Length: 226
Length: 226
DNA sequence: ACCTGAACACCGTTCAAGT
DNA sequence: ACCTGAACACCGTTCAAGT
Image (cartoon, rainbow over all chains, first blue to last red; front, side, top):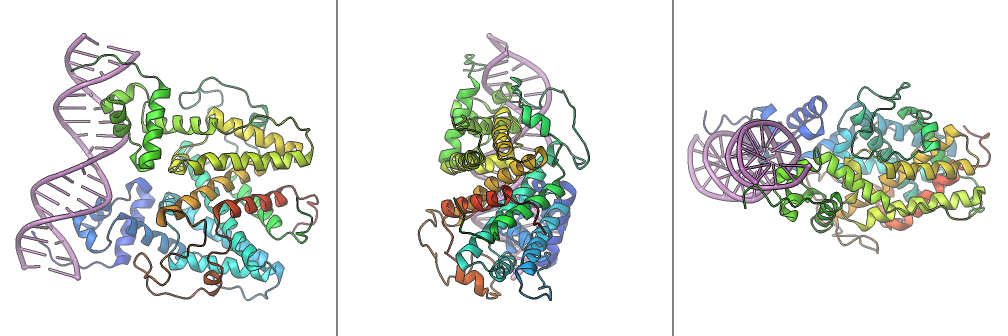
């Protein structure tokens, strides 16, 4: 068939194909040509749906962030409820990113400014306001949480890449094996070596880190600083 | 000239060319072919120096991290000194990343496991140990700082990409202009809209975030948690 | 409006060959 | 050991053309 049977796909169908590619072959495989291939389209046909690759990725990010549950828990606006709400949002965001291999690449390649990104921000801002923070502090606290979640997932992804299967359990790896690449000068790092494998469970250290961050963000006495 | 005048470059010279490319044309331009071009080499010649592109990027990351000053300040091992040391390391790491446009891409594309990355970790671990944290907590605190710095720089870079020139001052951008891409459903986000441009100075919010994180990591009374 | 086919200017990497 | 040249299997994007 030459020109085409006018199939008229929906954006949802295209994103579905893109996510299938992301989950089966990783972020690198999410290409305009690749998605077109899955859909049985010519690469150029993709440009009638998205003006460029960035817009496609932004669409994926939006759909991903839409999966984060931001329904207001029916609890009151007490500081205690506010804190657990922040934790839930942070954990929820982390979950949808960790569940999908390659999703981090997506987030890092795309500005987070769609409606669902802003909705998430809004919930965090509201929670920090409920916790008693003034608007400037709430804005910065929201940013700090955003930054922490994304950074943590990015780190986990980078580690996962070099030792697939997961270091969740005790996995010291090929212990004395020559390090992966060029540097064999092998200084010793007593503290690092000793602590290797201590707090290494990704989920555990993330939960711990978020709690400590909130300890600092919601500290009751902001007077004694310095 | 056909085969070649046996020029025998050093790794340092190759990395210099790679950084020149990074700083003038951004991370995307750092390609095996691109670097080879700057050096007057054929792309294939690059493979006698680095086994693949990843190793080249890892070499760049190592050199970048080598620029972070980790010289032990002559101060005593008091908790107060420990805290300021962590802040200095975090700020130092952020500086070398922020100064070089495109450096974030580098960090995110490469596992941080070279000697200089470990040296930085070691300094953070030592500081947290000086501050009185047990090995597990010190390891997790180190990870939290790592994550926070990288996440913050990645965020700033993403923002810089869509409004170059910097939102350092009050820069509301094209205020009511239709949002960059597809979504025009335009829910309203009262808190987000009100706080837009409040705590948005990258350096300021980073410094604030690191201090709050340390408030939580170095909290004196880990009893009253929950 | 949606699609094809050809084309342009790129990638990373491998392989056989030269010195 | 270091390098070239040709090649393979990819990219994102544009353009002219068909229905």
